Length: 162
View 1: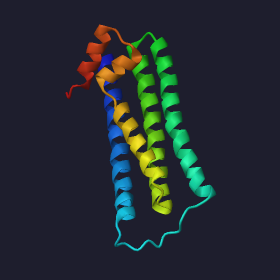
View 2 (view 1 turned 45 degrees about the vertical axis):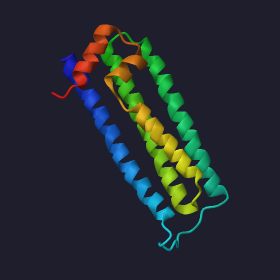
View 3 (view 1 turned 135 degrees about the horizontal axis):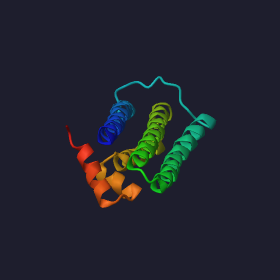
View 4 (view 1 turned 120 degrees about the vertical axis):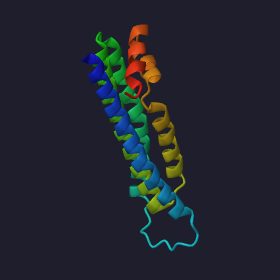
């Protein structure tokens, strides 16, 4: 029973992370191509001053915040005895992390669309790095939660397609 519940948690978390990434990437890609095309007339209002600075600060704060919050939750997970509890904390922390990263990608997309500032391209690239590093995998989970060998094997088993 525990194995099936672990499998469900893992699959749900993995599915959510992929959906978020599939929404964030094309949205930014379209705006990036729109921004760089010279043939499209740009009749959009330009962000400057406070709104532009706010979006920049918001994006960077979320990037730092997602890292800090995730690792704070991992400290809680390490203290747990039961593997199921550890995986639940990991899944919740990963979901939270990906939602933060999704907000970063949306604010970067909006910032690039309305201001054209290359800073937002850099912020989105950093978000992509975190998306890549944060994607759930059995090895990453085992390393972050400092699991014993038998728990590592169980995680590898639940990650295999059934």
